[in-house]
Image 1 (cartoon, rainbow, N blue to C red):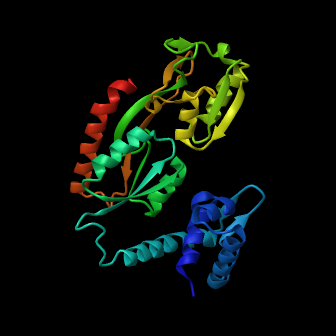
Image 2: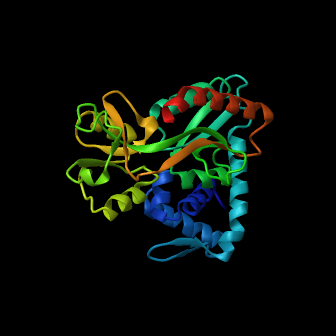
Length: 290
């Protein structure tokens, strides 16, 4: 009999493209995940994935099984919520959030949405959350907005800048030339969406600084800049006490953050609540972002 765990394991592999990442997402060991997928393949009578050393992809049978698995997952979640009201009659919102959202911005978004929804947060990369939104595993996501994202509600557009301690020689300087940064100690924000492009930018200019920290934690990275451990590039909304933003000549990366929702979940009333949050965020953060 196909169990809920089989469906969760199957969808996790589909959405991450990796048995290792899928096991981490659903908090099981990789052998447990592999055994579960093998059980599922025996029950459906077909191989569902093609595995090689670098990639995992769906077989033809796996592609046919995917919409069935997603429907089963939606039904399982509907059963979980049957007859349950999380907080009075408030609707529940499962909100995906990319890890690189600055804490003050996320706090403001949650404060705005918290009056209308009971919220559960799901963290992930932008691509992971887009897959979760498409499969119905989250109702809405706070992430990057692209030109082709129809129906998205933009919150803030901001540049990526260099952050230095307030006591740093560059603090208060409007623009820094990248060639002057070769002697600096850097902090690498591993959750940064433009990490690879940033590395390419500096490498092309023969700027190869030393690194004192590589971390997935945005808060730790920015706190370590304030502590003087190093400098880093980050979106402007990560500004905090003890650090100063400096533009880098030629480093022209920027991003737009916003809300994207499952159309089936986004009723007119819910859309109105999201637009109100967007207006409040724009008023509070946009002047700084510019």
